[in-house]
Image (cartoon, rainbow, N blue to C red; front, side, top):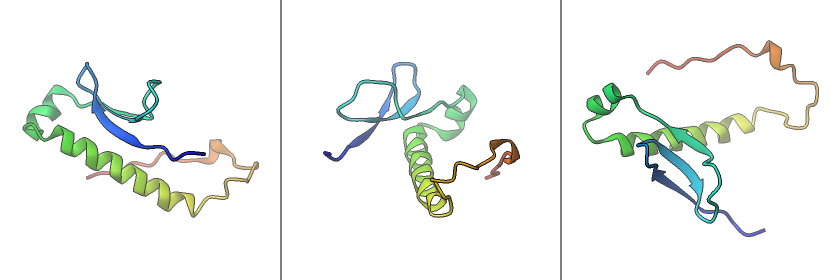
Length: 86
């Protein structure tokens, strides 16, 4: 299997997306900022989108060590929503 390469792009509607370079299908991740958030970031929205995607990738790497992906007994109804305040 050949390795996948990813890119962060700005979509025509202004959202940012993470997608495979060699694949035009739906993006893996999409980030949308409100007009108010864009104004607060003062043209740094691409840098913020990159940081958000990097943090998400790092979090997945950390979480995947704690999860038994082969466990068919996982009860999704017991999961509590997790909120992060920054």
